[in-house]
Length: 583
Image 1 (cartoon, one colour):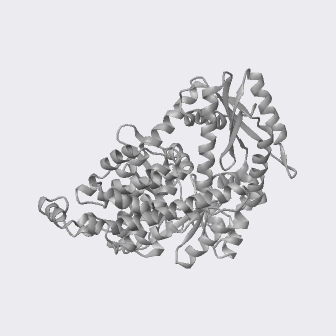
Image 2 (image 1 turned 45 degrees about the vertical axis):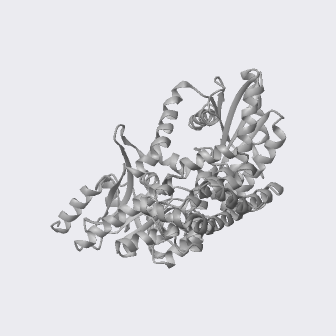
């Protein structure tokens, strides 16, 4: 029987649409039919209240079971699931002419006794629900088939170039296999077990100097080497970017040191480029602990090792626990922080030196937790960038910035653009552009008043094309952290920026000597010849202001003028300067 035939048969036997759909897929997904009925009944509450169609709820559950969304910390897989859910709902709406509720599909309100009486009397569920069931099952079948096709494709050829979606599926599949192997190792081995996590020191510089394609070749080289290095009871995975982890059995600490030494020797060079590695080691004490927590402990040791001068390897120590607790707190509270508006937009003024006047502001995020108080960006931003939640935070700040601009323009202040950060993750697809345009349209503001800051390291070809599209669509682009890396001049050739933001560290280094000041002067002159505006970040002293003014850099931002402040405080300052009375 087909899935549709099974679902129709179950419906005829008295099961509602949600039960019928999940029941049609239960056996092949390895689930007990009765358990599926119980679960779908619990999740069918919205349907019984006349809300979203039960076919949709059941379809989401089937897709979740088919794709294996079981790891709450696997944010890539979660993002993939969210995309597929949005895609499913869009297709369902299209094929059902916009009808997604029981009331719309049945023409009667199932939550009211009189509506339910009509539905039962006329047999509307048996007459009308099969259409929704048919649409849902067809979409689900196609999505599951596509998922397995992608898995089969990348399992045959590991080096094939993949799109973002296939990469997510591939990584999730590798993660599942790795976690399964490690779990068996922890359950079966009498020997001790250790997690060794390592990365490449200054990998960003390798990417900047030799290009991201070369960086990818380095990562592939390491993966291939690990296949030969690791024995039957040693499992490895490329966690993300240049971060790798090996789980190994061992007997003594000296044996662990030998393993790390061999890794260093076998991975010390690729195409005459020296690779320096940092290692973090966690030796397992409690085998009942979640594998992710073990990985986190190795990661804490690795990050601490990166800061060491004497050694490049550290074992996990108890004092790292505070960092683990902080990470756990952040990941457990980030969703509620968005929903409860705990994130606040702060604004840091940008000034014209010559006019001593505010000429704009940069939107920054602060997290004020109701119990913990201020959670600082250096604590949560790296974690959000790692797990993908930075997208949600950016969206939140973008919307707040648009609201603020609307409030200003309502008072006639139309010369104070607000710049917002566009994280590298956004630049990998075009979804963020639709979000930006929607916020601008909904607030009826001029596009020129919302400026976009892109970090200079975001310099691959795909990202450059997205930046060009943004430029064509009328956005003003700022290169953030100019001078912080080695690719600045290359990026200027490839990406159509309007403003260069001189990095604070670059400024500090240049101000330290006469030679540095001369370099700074030439950078300003170069920008003018390229018809680019300049903005100096991190300006904290009168000496910096005087030099910048002398060499022709008029726009500045930093503590010398003002620290980041709550948007309400900035609004008060702006209104006083513009001599405008608030409504």
